[in-house]
Length: 258
Image (cartoon, rainbow, N blue to C red; front, top):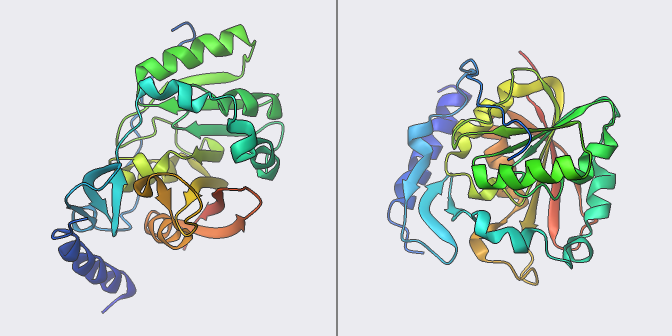
């Protein structure tokens, strides 16, 4: 049996078990159809269903229940005054391997909390602020205009595609967003195509391993689970940071070409 076949067989077993578990001012760019990347996993084999847990959607992916989506009604949470201190967002920005000319994707940008902080760090580049909710992009677009962030480009994505050009992104940032994706396998395949060969994906998620992090269980992720899912999508873990008080900071690069 080949390694890929072995992985597919293992995932099929995992999914079978899961099935019984109990527990607007700036322009918005429409999604761009990306070429189909090389298949890494059998998508049908890794999705399942379970009884929804607290904060969960009832849909599973590779052993994890996908979280329910926080909609545009959650803007106050995203922009809460204590966020910078609670999450030490200043430390996170300092950990990002950015160059002034980089093209950055803020995936699941929401109200633009990080988009507006990324834009000054790439003055000769661009920040693509992607979200699937037009209401979020409307808020973000107006904010970019008011703050004079001319290198911010809002992008309307889809549940299964990031909406970005192939080989266009140097760094993609996900802050407390990936765990809510309803179609993570398809989304990450899409992003794999959008990444430059030496690009970096930065995944920031509340630490599941730490019971002191008072966030709903389905809105947290372990390092092991995140690595499993990123590997399946074609990314290798290259570095982790533990400086933040509540969150993992995980850096991935696309698998080297064979």
